[in-house]
Length: 101
Image (cartoon, rainbow, N blue to C red; front, side, top):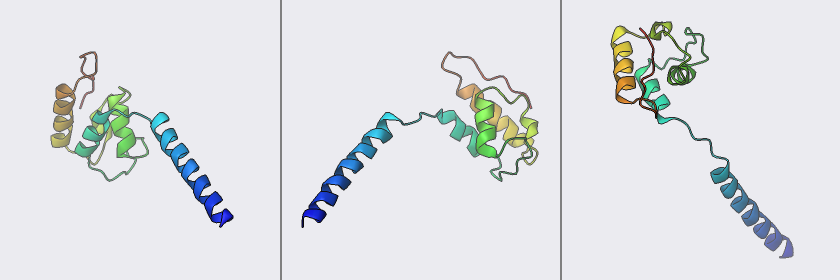
């Protein structure tokens, strides 16, 4: 009985510690990354030089990507949709991410 009680208390304490750590150490991510990623083809081919569409979308948002055409499987329709999304969702300072087709 003592072992069960000890393990129960230990499990509860560790669970609370993990819950606290998850809130304290949470990484905030720019929600625009998911918005841009949804407009990409989503095949994660790596033809753009990034390991997948998520990394390419992050590169767009961070201003690392200069040309959307680096995404080979995408179409002009996708590029225009991404450009419109970036115009509709500017940076916190109001500037628009400068990326070309």
